[in-house]
Image (tube, rainbow, N blue to C red; front, side, top):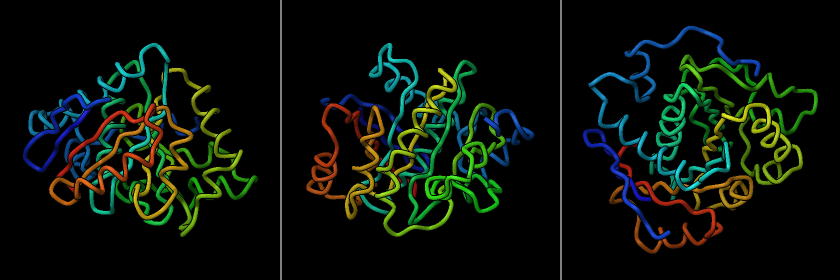
Length: 244
């Protein structure tokens, strides 16, 4: 699977070798969705929306009859737009009224989703939950204003969060979130694949990995290195993106 997206063109998919916050809050207006750089159903972003829905459909086809699944979205390097792709892939899952989507910001060094979605998290997010057993899971799952789409923001900044990502509490959290709702799909917004082991560590928790390449920004050698850092049986494909 390969996709391309920029500010004016949609990402077209091409085949590659192979809780508590639920339902809370008022739905966002079209203008608010655009401020958050989210796809919606209006004609102005129809091509973008269709492209992300196609990406969602291809992931569903790859997953087969496995039920809900966890998708890791990882940029090759900073600036490739991995968070933009992760956010809109989650929104595409939420478009389907039979599905729920949960976006988890796993970039604890440079978190983006809380600010992008303008979620008031009261300073509580993923890292706070993983490092403090007194923090309940429901305390870090937040409504986004998009029906059927929730967010776990990154929480406090951590330069080396890999140990938290490989902890039993992290795996138990993922298992709990999947088991709670059989129609809930998890999107993990990962740090860059090159430069730290965090994305590779997170791939152990995922069923599929989508790599985001900044169009014209990344060499073929770096793409190959990034692909090689993930288990080949989990690698779903590449999205070429021109939006940061």
